[in-house]
Amino acid sequence: MHLPEEARMGLSRRSFVKLIGATTAAAGITASLAACGTTTPGETTAPTAGTDTSPAGNTPAASNDGLITAGISYELGTNGYDPMTTTAALTLAANWHTMEGLTEIHPATREVYPALGAAMPTEVDPKTWEVTLREGAVFTNGEAVTADDVVFSFERVMDEANQSLYVAFLPFLESVTKKDDTTVTFALKYPFSLVPERLSVVKIVPKASVEADAKAFDLAPIGTGAYKMTDNGAASQKIVFERNDDYNGPHPALASSMTWQILPDASTRTNAMSSDTVQAIDSVPASDLATLSQSKSVAAEQGFGLVFTMFNCGSAPMSDVKNRQGVMYALDYDQICSVGMSDLATPATAFVQKEHPSYKEASVVYTKDTEKAKALFAETGLTSVRLLASDHDFFSAARPIIKESLEAAGLTVAYEEKKSSDVYATIDGAPDAFDIVVAPGDPSVFGDDADLLLRWWYAGDTWTDSRMHWKGSDSYNQVQELLDKAGEASGDEQLELWHQIFDVISENVPLYPIFHRKTPTAFNAETLQNFMPLAVTGLSFVDVSSSV
Image 1: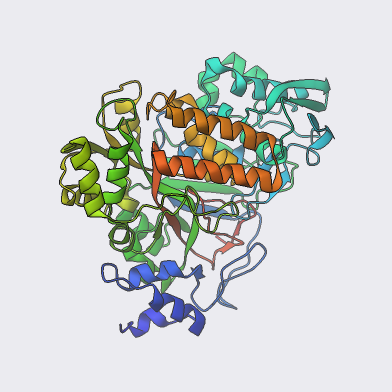
Image 2: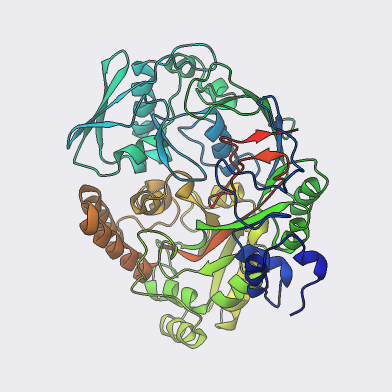
């Protein structure tokens, strides 16, 4: 393979070797950039916090009065910004900047740190923890943060009537009570080893404002973060933030304002980056990585984010596990990942990616085995399926390969493609609406531990009951028992229990990853200081300044 000279400029020999090593027949040099962690014109290493990665002498000095601009691939979700209910990629990323939990997980480094808490949670005894609030913390409406606000924030998430998806992450919590005006006590049902990490999923909101007008809060949330939102993007298709001058926490805003353009069209997003209309974009098309690398920094960070197959386990034909397994064996994983994803993905060999600290290869690893798939379908009599897929652009080239794989195994495929929100509007509460759904997911935006990642799909009723209709089955009951045991365990015992869950879901496949993906990002390292590309969905400007 011969790489054009212009595509090699600015890369070290080490980066160049990585670059050419990832080339695929389908994507050429464009996919190969994804094999590098990050490439920056004139530089050779991936950026880290506190490091200037732009060419020496070419970077204007940044100040805390700079402006940040970004292009975001995801559209606004059907709900708003209320951190009790929103799970949309765009609104979650916005809330990273405007909201705080008692603890937070840094979007890039994944470090757990005290946010609204003055310090990390204190373990009083194995079933009791305490957190003291940061002195002087106020909401963006000027009201002081109180222990009552903290109790309210947790109780509204834990209240089943509110149907918050985040309650699935908090099974260990018995109660949250006010000890005094600045201290909150957490009573646990059982000792739990991940309390500091898990408290971050609940963002603290002002009780009075939410109770007064919950709908208004959803559209224009009031938080304690380093930025405050001044335009929610509903009409303008731009989310605008201004620095919160009252913020006194550990990660203050290093820019005076941010404007995020909502750009779901891939070519529009790339053009905005090329023309310097924006300083960073997420979800860079693989075909544009090499071109962008000549003038901008590009990165493709391996993470947990995946594309999954979800089966309607409650109705024929997918109530038969042999049909679910047959579908998984029919898929051409190498083609899906190398051609369909331009080498920005790796076939799943377990529920988590190989780089995850809890990884262990599952008892069943699905590889392309068309004959085995045909044999399973012949045994069950399956001849046709209904396949519903989301239309996310990053895996648009993979979807035809998935359909063709099933057809090659002898199935007639009734294929339909919809926006993500329409996919779930179609299937929620409609037990006969589909056979297979193919869509992306990335609960690692909430945290990285295996318990959280597993509970996102396999514990809460939204997924297990309303969507995959798996709740109540023997394998469902087995997974719940193992999750509960793992929650009460720690160390090697906890890890072994998670591995057992990996095995159960690999054998029963109610919902299972096809691949784990690398997250491609492009950014201007000459105008953004300390920007760090993410392995999770979204963009973060925590600790980032701008010279614009």
